[in-house]
Image (cartoon, rainbow, N blue to C red; front, side, top):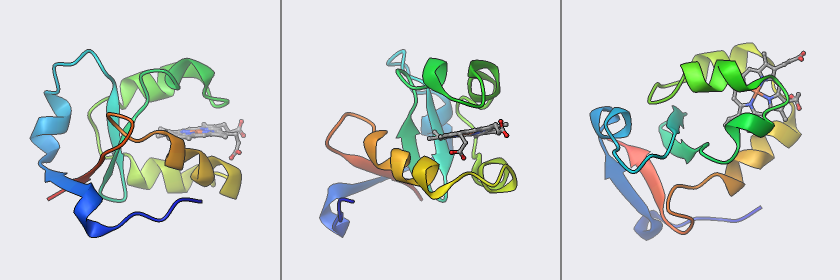
Length: 89
Ligand code: HEM
């Protein structure tokens, strides 16, 4: 998996995640922002649960489901704006 350095991480607020106007669907897991625009309809656990979580901090529900390590690995491919990592302040 890919290592990221602090300089690659831009910090934003949870409000900014909720109000991102780029027609992207973002959610937050463990203080990182993920872009699920192209993933939510491929989610093995269903499209609806992810749509409902748009803009939310889903750390707890993500853990409660008991997602596999494969699922956690998949987060690496869901960076917003493809190159940049966003983290919640
Ligand atoms: C972008 C983040 C997420 C990714 C990459 C992801 C990925 C996956 C994957 C790969 C599975 C198949 C089972 C496994 O490998 O663990 C799965 C199942 C599931 N996920 Fe997610 N998931 C995400 C977020 C969420 C969230 C936020 C919720 C709840 C609000 C959720 C609820 C579920 C449920 C209910 C299942 C089905 C479990 C089952 O059928 O037994 N997922 N997810």
